[in-house]
View 1 (tube, rainbow, N blue to C red):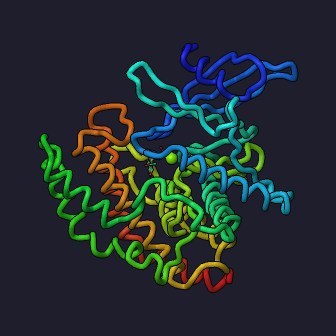
View 2 (spheres, rainbow, N blue to C red):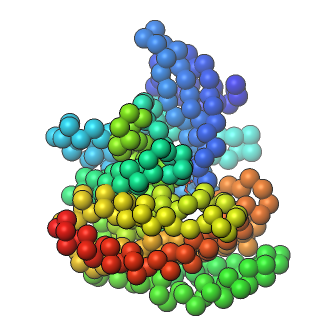
View 3 (cartoon, protein in one colour):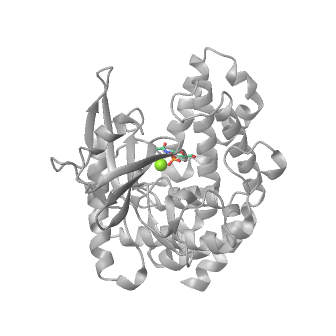
Length: 375
Ligand code: GN1
Ligand code: MG
């Protein structure tokens, strides 16, 4: 095992002897390792994460947000033990900090944190990994609905905006234009047809951002609601915990709903390249919306409800912009596994968007009817 990992984990309040550290390569941003310790009471697991400080410029603020939100959720969960929900708990360092700062050989700071491992759970990358996709989609919607509900009385102003303008669609679009202007390769030309389409849609897809703080309230939101950011019970398939709280910030629930459906209800992984396989499974999207509204319908404004369908398109559009921008910028943000990975991810989200646009009316009609029924 890496000596550096040993050295880093030695700074946390963990009992026992470290016996293994396995890398989990799923995230696109941070690096994660599953740690196993031997203790007199048996083996114990933890998650070690190196925070990507290129993305999270102020890791201490990230940990502060996470600490505040987790404490709030934990307190509320003690009043509802039957829910089965849990939340992330970090392990403090020996000096009682939420995070350990390591200075590497180049003299740069590296930030590490350790979470307690939540056992008997599974996180799905895509519904295809599960036996009952509709149940997974429904439970995913329910779990994020419950997450919003648990945080609905948390004072939004206490949270730092750890990545400013994270879901600011117009700014994401501007970033693409800047990337195109400054490009030193011909990567933008490879996607010129698609770029023309993206330009034609910016006005329509800025709608949620433009209404934020007006008819769409600012609430505590997760902002990265990929399906694999939910731990589900291995026995019941029900949501147990929402994880990856790095981007918990003030935002709109619509960002979370749209991103959740984009991720949980797509037929393929985000880097699938076969156009035939890239589409939204509408039945799964409906199941997700049902689960979500069962938890949150009473708390939403009518404008929020009306924009649920739109949010799926906006978040897919936005991620398409982000992957393409990173591709044109020569891959400085998302981790890539091969040279054209970001281009493939972009094309995937682009095709997914086109498919969701075709299904927009059906989704809107479903939301309208369901809202009447559950409210
Ligand atoms: C990143 O690393 P991961 O998978 O949790 C990204 C999300 C994207 C997602 C796309 C902080 O999330 O916004 O939707 O990749 N997180 C950040 O796969 O940028
Ligand atoms: Mg994340």
